[in-house]
Image (cartoon, rainbow, N blue to C red; front, side, top):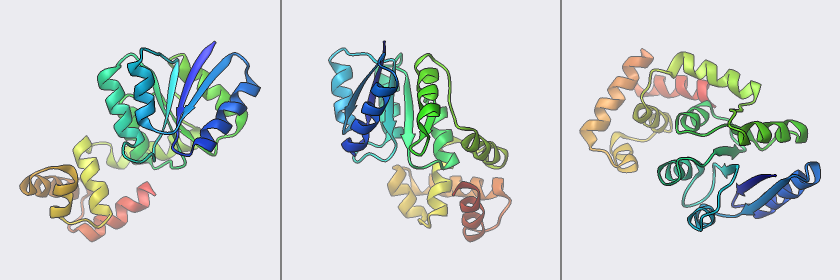
Length: 203
């Protein structure tokens, strides 16, 4: 039997997904929880799962933050991401952070079950259309460091250096250096042109 833990703050969605999976495959045991804190409660109690699915947009601790915490405390636990978003920089961050896959919430039933089986046995799953977007992103932005990727997104969102420094807990001078590096790698001379270019490639 495959054991699956789904964390989604919309518990109705998690329960509906759990029910659907149990109907499709009686050998799958699914638990749904509404917060990352409850995920950690299960793990701290000594439970293990073939796969944990984290919703990206959970309050307090989002999926990427939760992924990092699980990787640090329970490095052998397999974790995948579940989201209504498929932004390539988010997918890249998740995969680079150790996620075994990224599942769009729009995925249909049969491909979903196939993806879960693949991920639960150690395989990586990214839908073809998301993979194509990710490849395009990698071609242009793949040489950004993880911190530069965070800075790039915040610059594209219109934040000032001071605001970015506060958001990422970095020194203002450090942020300025990262912004300069990001603009240089993008071959643009100002933040406005960069924002237009980056948003076009990532939205």
